[in-house]
Image (tube, rainbow, N blue to C red; front, side, top):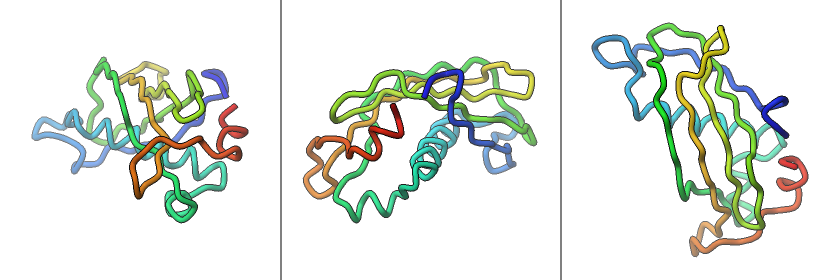
Amino acid sequence: MTEENAFEWPITIYIEDTDTGGIVYHANYLKFFERSRTELFRSFGVSLQDMLDQGYSFVVSHMDIDFLKGARLDDQLKVRTWPLQVRRASIEFCQVLVNNEGQFLCKATVQVACVNPQTMKPIVIPKNILSEIA
């Protein structure tokens, strides 16, 4: 998976996502990106509950984010997600929120670590995830 064939997830901006001026509150961009990563895994046939049942989970270990242009109430947007680097126990993603004109509104680099949810210690990413990400 690359930027050219990135996973895309649609986002509609609702009143609950905005401040009193109708601009998306900054913390909500993190929610949009989290939902897109969750749906990316679901597109591989793996749900969050499946991951927990199988003894692994992904947690955000680092994030860099640039707020480029405010999203507004009723905007119809897409989160595009693709891996930048895959390691044995972590994946670094690029995620961008784009409008219908292709403008980037927000861009983040997000590193997630694969961990055992009981111990919170890093573990090797399951092969089925690695094969789908690659």
